[in-house]
Image (cartoon, rainbow, N blue to C red; front, side, top):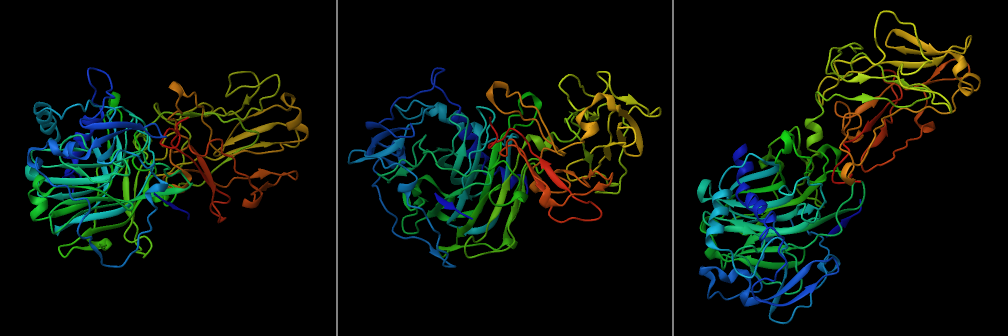
Length: 612
């Protein structure tokens, strides 16, 4: 894994056949218990430092050779040829020794990761496999994807450098994955080969996987007869991928290539600098003779909508493509192998993007091609929080000494701000009370604040309309200030004076004034069941997403000793974030007369990066 320092539903569903099979396999148990028994043909079992159990299986008794078409198969240990790179791009690949622990299996055996979900003392029975295949050829409604596709005839392989993350997956029967899919044919005759990484709640870590399917067979990894393992050094298929990328931290990726060897018709898989093995030509019809007619790169998740709500499962990094490098997951150097056995890097104009649920996940192709990264794109998203932004009831009560909230008369559509609203809208509450050592409260829940406004019930009142993701944006103007003559602390909302706190309630604030001012967002996290809350801050989107997506403050200011409203320069402001993996803040560098000093803030809470 290299460390980097600095049209439709048909297209999306063409690989559901294999992914649904994967969910069946990852949720399987034996007699109600997770199985830990050896695979058929095991000579010795070892345990890696990461805890994985490795079965050293006699190379001629590996799962592939229980297939009736492969009974007398002769193993080919290396491909006879390798596709030519049309553009001469040299992909820098980190040696596998830096990623995987070498396995010292006896000679004549191959290392296979023990699949902890199944009993492998014998091949799967035909009745069970038929049941699985009947399921995988349906068109499940709970699969979601954000992907890039190319349609072309006679493609004989594909490659990509795939950014590796460890996304949050909510339910035991859900998953999140990033993969290359090579597909030949359509409908019931479709044949698919895929490879990439996936995360399931079985162990909540990214693992490399392969898979294949035809009209009457197929599976993930080595869970059925088919794929012939030739690598005797490393247990890569089903193996843990470590380290993985961190939000605004080090980024890690893997190089994956799937291709057909013209001379023999075998479909080989390469991972980093290692050949893993192949699918024999006898398993396929269309892919062997006509090749693939489409290739898919991208992300995929399963959403079971527990309790009627969208899953909180992340795709990719859990961040949308607009957040860019170090935040959003990416694919780089995507390519396909043409009829002349040449690795071709497609131009953006021949690529199609397909997203099943744009309000949850997205994909964005990078416009500029480069020799370092080739054709590349970002994908993914934060799932349920985008869906839940609209119509959510909330209340906010930050404790402040002085606050000036943003004001403009409709940043998005020149729509007026509103202070009064009907039911089922956000609640605005003043909690500007200084919590002294012996008194204080929110709104009018104790004696202290003197209400003077006789027209509107603003304190504790509902606000409507409120901002929508990529829609109209609404704001309120709030000012808290001391009247020098009387020492009273007044509150103004829009064009209305609400009332004041008498000077007798305070000591420091009346005489010396405030020594700090805070603007921003605040949430309470009770960590139910030991995990971080999914409570949004602001809009639920990070500051990097910008206007119309992230929440903002504008025209922030403080009143100085001479009773003048002053708008501070960025250089005198400090930013403080209690948990940057969950929420963030970003001051806008450019000051303007329309917006003054401004910043964006917030985030989604529970995600692949924000768990506890």
